[in-house]
Image 1 (spheres, rainbow, N blue to C red):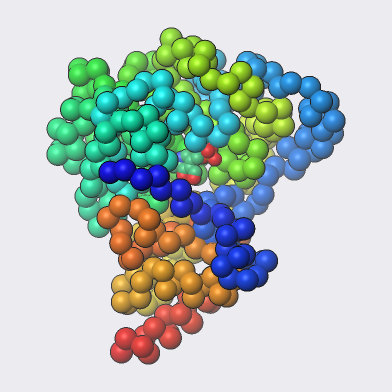
Image 2 (cartoon, protein in one colour; image 1 turned 120 degrees about the vertical axis):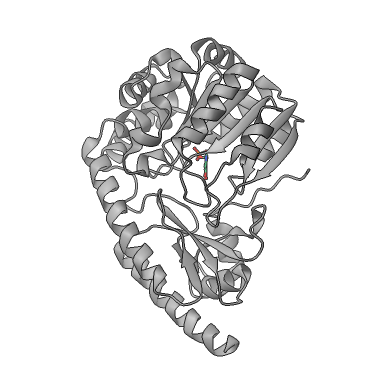
Length: 366
Ligand SMILES: Cc1ncc(COP(=O)(O)O)c(C=O)c1O
C-alpha cells in the first residue's frame, strides 16, 4: 500500500488539455450548482482591499462564533482549516497513528494523509452492492488500529452508514482507546440530517473527531474552508501545531456570511433534493447504467453493458461533459462513475448524451 493517489473531480485544466476545448458541463466535482451565496460575493467584494492588505485573524473568532451557532457545539470544539483536506493531514501528523483502518472505496486523501504520516494503512472492503455495509468483521478489525476514518455519507458511493454501526465503533473506540474520524463533509445535503450526524454526540465521545466542509454545499471550493470538531483539549493541541494564518481573510468572511444565509441554505437544500430525484429517476431509465439512490448531492452508478468507465468518461468528455471516473478507487475497477447533481437544465443535457451513448453501446454489444 503505498502510492499517493491525487485523482479528483473538477480538474478543468486537465480536461481542457485532454479534450481540446475550454467549456464543459462539469459533473465530476460535487459542488452546489447554484454557485456561492450572493451575500458572500457582496461581502467579499465590499471588503476586498482591507481583507487583502491585513493579516487574517489567526483565531478565526467571528467564523468560530457563527460555526458554533450553526453546528450547535461549543467554540472549544472547533478548529478551522484551509479546507477539510488540510485538517485531515494536520490531524494525522499530530496523532501519528501506527495503523489506520479505512473502509473502502472512499475519499483518497485519508490514505494519502496516512501515508504522509508513515502509518500502516488497512483498507477494509465495504460490503453490499452499494458498498454501504460496515459489517461486524470491520468492527472486529477496527479495534486493532489507532485510528479509523469513515466518510458519512461516503464519497463516491453516496451512501450513509447506519447510526447503530457507527455507534458500535465509537463504543469500541472508547474501550480500546483508538480514535475515530468521521467525515461529514456532505452531511448538509442529507435529508433528516440529525438522524445521521454525530455532531450532537461530540461531548459523549472524547475519541471522536468530525470533519465538516463549506466547499460543497456553499460552492466555495476556491476559498478553502473546512472544520474539525473534537474534544477541546485535543483541539487546543492541534491549534498549537498549525500554521497561525491557515484560514485566509476572504475565506473567514465568506464562511461567516454563508453560515448565516438561511435563505440560501433552504433554497440549496430544496433545489438539490428536487434535482437529484429527477436525475436519479432519469438515470434509472438508461439501459446499461445502474444508479444507486443518492443520500448526498452525487449519484454513484454501475456500468452494466460491457463498457468501461474510461470509455464512457471519454465519450462524454469529447462532448464537453465531465463525470468522475471511479477507476482510481479501490475495488471499483472500470465499472463505476460518479455524477454530481447539477442544474435541472444541465442534468437533462447529461441524460440526453447518456441515452445516445446507451443506444450506441446497445448496438455494439447486441
Ligand atoms: C469526503 C470529502 N471530504 C473532504 C473533502 C475535502 O474538502 P475541502 O474542499 O474542504 O478540502 C472532499 C473533497 O472532495 C471530500 O470528498
